[in-house]
Length: 423
Image 1 (cartoon, rainbow, N blue to C red):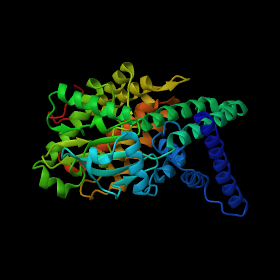
Image 2: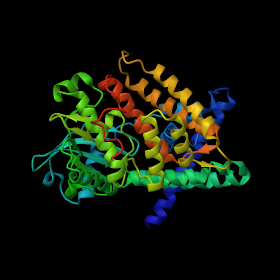
Image 3: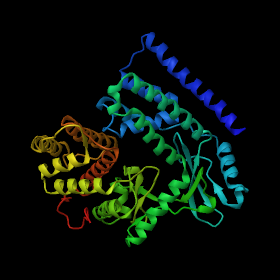
Image 4: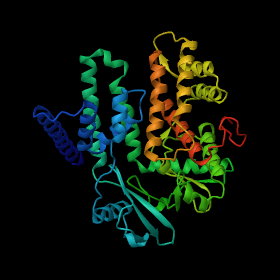
């Protein structure tokens, strides 16, 4: 029976999609013609969860998509209206299979955050711990599967009609999105990521970083109950001073923890923007939100490791050589020419970030994306195509570079002995 129900829901969803696309087409005919990237972003936002996530994938994948689309999709908003608390309560109760007051003494009816896939509420367990409950919105998984199957089929048809597109492998991209998005829908996987990262901290005797504890007796595939961290974002310099006597040391802890995870944990946190790194009241660095993680193959990691080593000593030939090993190419790439282009980019970067300019979160995000796109563009102009994991890795490095400018402008990242980048 559920297969029939899902089939009906799927057909209804495809009907909704066609209706939104039809409306966009009618507006276009009537003369409402914004630039194509903006039109696409607005359409994606109208289509909801899957397409918003797809938009974010485009924003974080300059290795796959043209610059104007990557830039436009930086504005793709994943803020959706809060579901009524009655609906949220019902989902939690269904998932737990027992009365809420046996588990939680209190749940704040006002959401802390609401995105396309989930909504987050603060709560307290009957045992007294402060927690947050991440609750998956109803029907999300079915919508994702229907949309992604629809997109996959469309991509295959397009590839058949225009074989040139197969180099970017649109259907391959859709499959990659499907894998990452279905993982994001499975809170058991996220709970496992949190557990693995906690074990990694324990095994490396790291007491200066923390990850929220998962309360398994009240977590399922669709709800995740985690310890609530009290603190401030890493980039809130004024507040940090109240929590951590030495902001520079706090940043070094965050960077060393992340670098160590590249070789000593089975994944790395692939979204270290300021909202996901907190300075806790006891001065520790809190890593939160493990919905997006990256995994890197050992041979790719060796090339990335060589790339970082080359960056550290300003060896542009070494950087070029490593980029060639990381990328996929159909032609011979000249190391000296690629190195020359990278040198010019780095000279521009030095001019871009004057230390005395105050930090602005949105501006930093833009800078990170622009540099990332420039590096990828240079690689592509030499015939290189990079795996998405490389872009994800590079993006985290660039975030940390920005944090150094805010929290420790005097620090030389490549010479500071407290940083264990490559160990």
